[in-house]
Image (cartoon, rainbow, N blue to C red; front, side, top):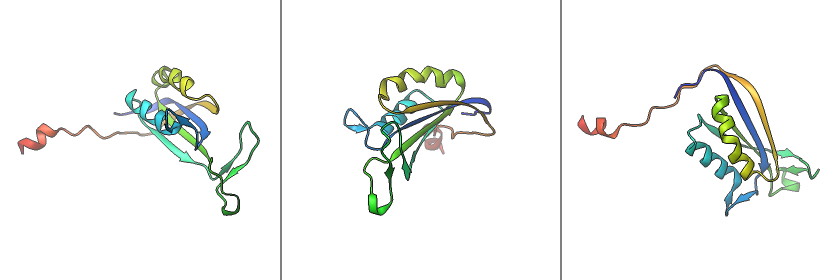
Length: 121
């Protein structure tokens, strides 16, 4: 897949311990983005932060938190990201979702492996 030019970035901030049907919420979002055919998704674990609860979560040793902030970042065309938003709305009951216009300079995904071509060699 190739993606260049204008795009839309969605960043989803949740807690590391947020769960969806017995699995981490961030993993469910990434798997759904993959299934939806989006260009890509990455999860970043925060080292410190606070949200609506005003509780500071940190990875510092003396106050080790079990619920660090997590950011899931997805970038694709505006049409594809907006089509995915209802799934985010279903999954994220507490958190923050941000949309940003962005410009992709270069993104070239790997082509799917063709096992038939490999076998013929």
